[in-house]
Amino acid sequence: MSKTQVQNEESEEAPPSEPLAEASRWRLRRSLALVGLMGAGKTAIGKRLALAAEVPFLDADAEIEAAARMTIPEIFALHGEPAFRDGERRVIARLAETPAPFVLATGGGAFMDPNTRKLLKERCVVLWLKADVDVLVRRLAKKSDRPLLESGDRRATLAALIERRHPVYAEAHLTLDGGEATQEEALLHALALLAREGLAEKRDPAERGPQ
View 1 (cartoon, rainbow, N blue to C red):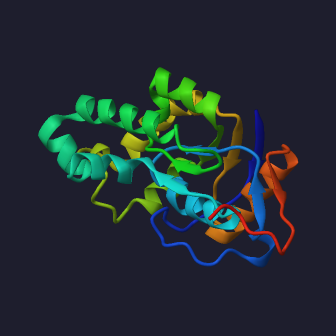
View 2: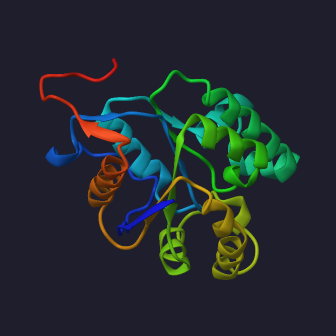
């Protein structure tokens, strides 16, 4: 497993801006799946990576909501977490069939499922966006759409999730440590890591990616 450090303070839901000049015109050699806890930046960095490489961005949580025709908090409230996890498993299996390359942002618990974990590791390069509890608490302080954080102390809940999930996330092919920098800076670090591993390369400026 390869590991690098980068800092990323902005919330993962922030809309993508145009990528920095250094981040544009890239080619991904394989599809990329982002894993990590809520607040780690999977959606924000995923959108930027997909934009830089001109490949589809897939959001597992958004696809689950579309398939269920309700929000994730509503699914938890009406059907419980087991039903949500079952739907999550099926949706990710479907998304993994998308013709490569693509960038997929997964929910925080998706990689904990052994079948989903095996599938993603076979079909994609799995990149773990790692963040410590202080960063996650700060980013999620104003969020009200995270069912696992709706009861009890948020810091204690996140600390418990870190203890349980980080050893499993560590099975990802690559790790990017989080911290305090901008999303565009995080994007550059992610592309540099992928390039060092031979998984991404710059395209000719005149070349366009998949349309």
